Amino acid sequence: MGGSHPCRLQTMWKQPLSDDSYADTVRRVELLASFGAELLRFAVPDIETAQLLCKLQGEVSIPLVADIHFDHTLALACLENVPKIRINPGNIGSEEKIREVVEKAAAKGAAIRVGVNAGSLPRKMRGEIDIALAMLHAAEEELEILERVGFGNVLFSLKSSDIKTTVRANELFAERYDYPLHLGVTEAGPPIQGVVKNTAALVPLLEKGIGSTIRVSLSGACEDELIAGREIIAAAGLGSRGVNIVSCPRCGRAGFDVHGFIERAQGRLLALDTPITVAIMGCVVNGPEEARHADVGITGSGRKALIFRSGAIVRRVDDGEAETAFFEEVEKLCRERKGQR
Ligand code: SF4
Image 1 (tube, rainbow, N blue to C red):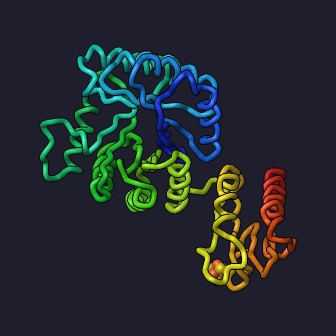
Image 2 (cartoon, protein in one colour; image 1 turned 120 degrees about the vertical axis):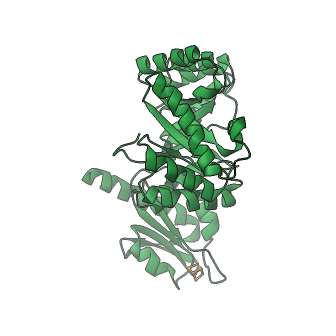
């Protein structure tokens, strides 16, 4: 992360990590990876979770991050096998404990994220009028500790639930320091509100080159956080991963169940890693034109569905066969593109 590396997408596991559901957890981590997760953070409240997380890291394909508060022994346990921890030196106590953690992180080549949150600023900074500045000062206090103990493999996050405060705090930090930043609007709310807030805050920052990783925090599913994160990275012009979906909002002219089709097809499309554009359109008014501009398109036409490949109609099928035929074309195209690569 950081430097000239691409912006990395992450999400956070939303349940306690448990032995009982371990096999399901391994499967679900891989599913999240297929949705674009490049890092996955877990809360680590006790030693059992720390041990389980180390085991899990050995069995999944993406790096895991341990989120720890107060107890440095949990950090030491996680650093056995986890390549990144989120911990604030200021809340784990004596300098001796901090040294123990950073020495182990250095020996293992692990990174540390320091997270400053507007909702949990140090007591002496609460009540400050300029919250963004107070967040910067809180980050600087943590940085001072890490610099004193000689640890530099660190990144920072400065998060607020307020859009402008998040933007300004990160701008202030980026003006002064070169450390990579993890971006996000914290406690952003349910999916629609949360996506809007994160888009409004993160796109301008990413466009200015600020931000090495992002997480869209939603009161919703990890998959939604990842879909939103991918769109935000693409909207900031930092490349797109996988499938771009163009679809009509649907109106009274639709001769084809666009919404139902998208609901069924979305997960399968977003798990594809070939960068293609698909258009899913309801009728012959705008449908054929949009579908023509996409790599693969489908549009309703009476009781039939037309399927396009790069502008040409390649199939006319009945409603009931539309999904199968569409995915046959999508998969054929992905195979061709992979062959070309
Ligand atoms: S493509 Fe057709 S069905 Fe969809 S919104 Fe446009 S006019 Fe309506």
